[in-house]
Amino acid sequence: MPVTFDPKRELKIAPSILSADFARLGEEIRDVEAQGADWIHVDPMDGHFVPNLTIGPNVVAAIRPHVKTVMDVHLMISPADTYIEAFANAGSDILTVHAEAGPHLDRTLQAIRGFGCKAGVALNITTPLSVIEYCLDKIDLILVMTINPGFGGQKFTHSVVDKVAAARKMIGDRPIWLEVDGGVDPTTAPLCWAAGSDVMVAGSAVFRGGTPEDYGKNIAAIKNACK
Image (cartoon, rainbow, N blue to C red; front, top):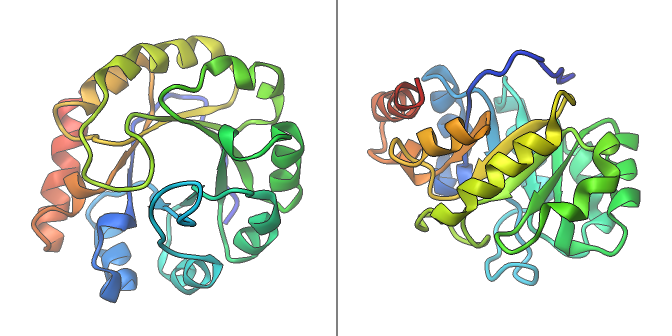
C-alpha cells in the first residue's frame, strides 16, 4: 500500500510483533489492528548485528496479507543492503536500516526508495544524530532506539529523551516521522511524545494480557497517557 506522510503531527502506535504469539501471527496482527494499532512493527534480526535471531523475508511475505495498515519493517541485520530487495518484495511499506550496519548509508537509503519503500534510519543509543545530517533529504523516518536492540521487554533508557528532542529539532518542517523503540509504555510514552516523537513502537506493553480486549486497553492506555 502507498504510505503518505501527514504533515499534521499525530500519535501512532506501532505494536511490535516480536511480543506476539508467533504461532498465530496473522490473527494477532488482525486483532491489534482491530483494537486501534496504527502500524505493525516487524523486527527481523540476524543473530550477528544483534544477539537474537528472529524472522526473514519469507515470514514478512506470509504476514503481509494480514496487515491492513502500514507494515513498518526494522532491519536489525548487517550487512543490510544484500536483503533490501527481498524485504521490499515481501511487502514492506517502510524499511528501516541501522546507521551502524553499513558503511554507505546514503547509498542504502537510495536503494530502499528505489524499491518503492519509505526509507528509515535507526540509531542506537550511543550513535549521534550527526551521522544522518547530510542525508536527511533521503530519509522518511528516524528511529531512535531507547534500548539496546535485540530483545523485547527491556527497560526504557531515560537519557535518550534529550536525543529525541534533538532529532525533532533536526527534522524541522521536513516530512520525516520520528519513531521511538524500546520500553515504551504508558509511563514512558508521554516523555517521548513531549520530546517530539510521533510513532511509538510498543511490544510487551501492547500484547500483555493475551486477548484482543487486553490489546485494546493497552493501546488506549498509551494513547491516553500522551494526551
